[in-house]
Image (cartoon, rainbow, N blue to C red; front, side, top):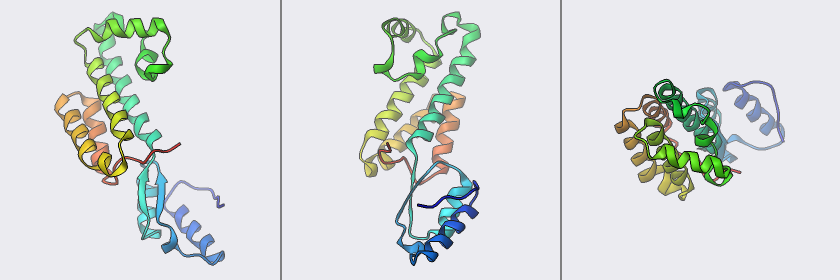
Length: 174
């Protein structure tokens, strides 16, 4: 166990020093799971040369949910039916109440960018359920292509963020 203050790449340097104090080496670390912090990613690359980076699924889905909610907020003023539906879109299908399910069914019949963003969220969840080598290649690349082709600003931004992190999607992370 190791713990220290800090949220930058130097934190990894302190970790490597702690490894040495316990007669271990940075080269022994093969896998690291982290969020998409550029500071941590560069720290991992600098201090843990043999470590493969796995991005944390929670943070990937948080980006997607934030994008979906941004699309909903943009459409709400011109689509009164979208007001007070935030949780309808953000909850997982099995966690919705019957009234939320019924309302979402009505909304999905409308020609809304929010519906398209929601479908992209479900597609991303499916992508992240694939075995890592499949998800990191064909599926994530296809998802990024669809997100960019949608022309929906927040989705295009998420696709760009995923492109920036070639480590790809995470393995299943509890």
